[in-house]
Image: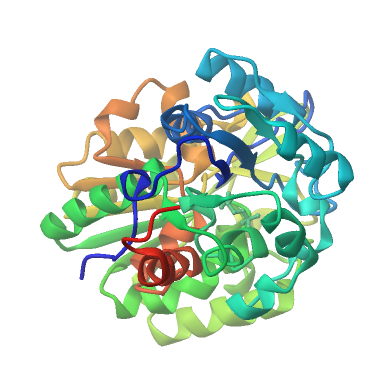
Length: 406
Ligand code: 3PG
């Protein structure tokens, strides 16, 4: 069913202070601190660019508390300035006096980037919309904005205050990224064919594992090929890894993986070989042969060959989360091999998440994939048929503000 939502054309945003919730959360190189992705910036810049006659307050989160990618958005504001071809202000504050006063002094055509929303404790919690409206973040910012544009499709699965808190309080519409992603997905849903091969990887184990049942129930996972840290959790569950993985919530995840494999062993593909760091380089081994704790950073070449056959024979292939630590040259072969298999598949191909879109560009094959979404966990949930808080917020806003203007 088409989603009911307002677009930039439905609200009169000229001259208004617009809170633009985008997602420029970016992989950060663990050693150099470099921002490794451009795609989400380009998406955000489309919407910000189209708000050229407004006073735009750009808001995004970056990373997760206590992880190495939990950094300020100052460097992000410079990337946006380059893409927009104009000056962009940055304020090292989220909703304190400095941020609020910068919002008030914005002139038409100016863009202000707030600091990492997750520096504010409330953004790290999930709320029902009426409770989100009561947060300090929403109450304070609301006094200094006239409208809200929700464009963070890749954060659509988080009911944080910046996503669900404003729709009932100020005129709210979808940005260009949300519109484009939903249109592309509708198009894909109209032609998708089975068998449906889903390749899951990356380090966000909970996002992937929590959605597997629903992906299967929604006929979007005839075969599930496991890679990345998610793959390690399944290898541990299968008894092929003998040491503790050091993954948060490992017990719970391993138990869930065991349960899934016990129910339908043939549905799941596990890595046959993995690449570990040895003598400063890459060594491919059978995981069951590793005696003690080892840094497993990629899938091995036998796994790439075996998974590639499923990928090439699929009617639809969906890949979410990178198979390996492709930011290191010696551990990029798994990610490159599986992406190349997707690029040469006759099936419909969907790539999900910031890391993989970065990898596709690195290998120069981004134009050989049917849909590259900037969303990772959010897209997994969407394909699994789950309701996404950001989409709910847009539907509520269409009811509340439709036809009324900003
Ligand atoms: C993502 O990269 O999937 C989104 O930016 C959401 O980030 P999160 O998983 O840390 O909430």
